[in-house]
Image 1 (cartoon, rainbow over the protein chains, first blue to last red):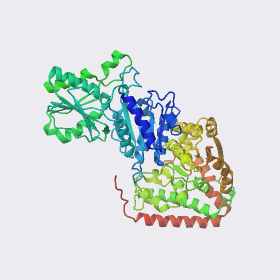
Image 2: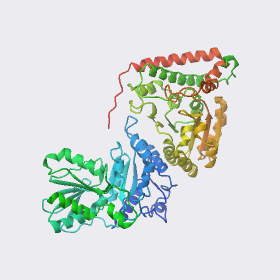
Image 3: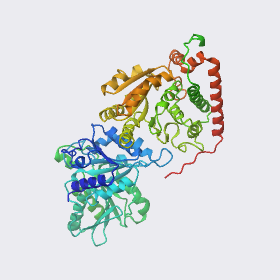
Image 4: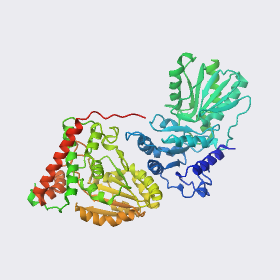
Amino acid sequence: MRVAENLNAALHAVMDRQQDLYLLGEDVLDPYGGAFKITKGLSTAFPKRVLSTPISEGAITGVAAGLALAGDRAIVEIMFGDFAALAFDQLLNFAAKSVSMYGETVPMRMVVRCPMGGGRGYGPTHSQSLQKHFIGIPGLALYEMSPFHDNLAVFEEMLARAEPCVLFEDKVLYTRQMHQVDAPFSVEVAGGVARVFLDDTPDCVIVAPGGVAHRVVAAMRSLLLEDEIGCTLLVPSRLYPFDVEVPAARHVFVVEESTAGGTWGAEVAHHVHQRHWDRLAGPVTLVHSAGSVIPTASHLEREVLVDEADIHRVIRKVVRG
Amino acid sequence: MTSLLERAAGPILDDADLSLMLTIRAFELKLLDLFGEGRLNGTTHTCLGQEYVPVALEPLLGPADHVFSNHRGHGHYLARFRDPHGLLAEIMGREGAICHGVGGSQHIRRGRYLSTGVQGESLPVAAGVALRLRRAEPGALACVYIGDGTFGEGAVYEALNLIALWRLPVMVVVEHNGIAQSTPTTAHMAGTIAGRAAAFGIAHERVEGFDLPAIRRRLAPPVARVREGVPLVVEFATHRLGPHSKGDDTRSAQAVQEARDADWLERCRAARPEHVGRLEREAREHVDAVAEEVAARPPSRWVRA
């Protein structure tokens, strides 16, 4: 099953199970079914609770917050996650704040879905990975879609948190297969963290969100075959708050598609340094895209975005010196 | 300067309404005094001159209705709950505070009443609440207080569009006091509030003066229609007597005097000086006693989740 199909099935199931759940977004109605077809069939199955909206990201996020405030639940689809910038006030100053700023816990059951990332030639305002801009907001939890996490379980977890959540979905994942890892690697999921591993003790641990997991696994394969470097990959479903127990290793890497500066990886590195400084051979290494806008032309976009070769090169250099 | 006797006498108001308006007035003046004495933390935005607006609307609202207030919301809260103790405790961070002192003057939630400190932010939220009300509690509405300055925010137009498009039971109350912080309406708004409502096909009522029974009679039919999904913008032409916050009034003496001349209290005093004077004294004594009692309470406690 492709990731997009898993996500669509998850939305159908969660809408069916939770009768007070709304889905709002631009162009989400059938037959269009959303710009990436993720909401296909939902408006036919749940016509009263799937609402196509004007091009008003701030307002629809506010409407979701109003529904949540009054006791309902809501999922918002932001067509391109880049446009979540237009909903930032509602997320930062209202939805997340409302959980605690009125002195008592106010449940706010809402999820904002943000298709993110480049690799498809959509250019500087339709290709970003904005995760870093949402880190560290009290009352706002960040998740990222992954090929190893069943989306229905992720939605149920997010809505059960009773605080606003943002789900980042790397667009290049939509057409990939779920749960696919080839030998000699194995994958297992426990406690919201997928682990891709070899039987032997690894030389290093890589932490990466779902969007770059396949690039990391491809680098892990070439590192094993060409350089005999064994890696374990951890893919957390929830990016923030980050509480993943990183296993003992002398080298730890964080890989993400974000452009340089103030990254999620820096947050993860701080977490690892605080707990494991004495057993690390050196500081956690951050691997990410260049500090640049994301160009449109494919040869220029490839220069900026982190890819399998970058990951391989950085890990080999750090591990082998 | 116009003398009291020369001013047009105001309408005769019901004692209960007048006492509530005077309590709000006394509360706001008390806050400015407490700030002056260095006994309050942070900031405040008083509704001096605008007290009658929420008092006029209160009988038109029911317990199932949601009320969204803003940074200048003490009058809205007091008209809804008549709870100066809880509000002052919230502002002073004392035991018994409505939100344990976390929200303060601008961020208050009690039942279906909620205020936020960012301009225009509550309109889309009210649309969401109204969406639920329409399904779960038909007949209930969401009432949102904003000011003329709020019309600078894009969120207002996104929300007005949705409210009209989806026929949501939302009443937007605009307290048009002619000034946004230090900027007069003439310098921040092109066109009119009526024109902006009309652009979305939303009914608009402009209310002048403070004849509360007449205002209620006039607004009752359109408010009843809001409950059936015909949204409404009610614009109160009103006056801000005091500074935006505290001590930050840069208006000319003439502009301030014009606001004072139009003040409901001056006009009510002119109509019935002794009667209004007595109610005013009672309200001040009541608020003085509240302040003394609340100030003596221990600090509020907040258990973080």
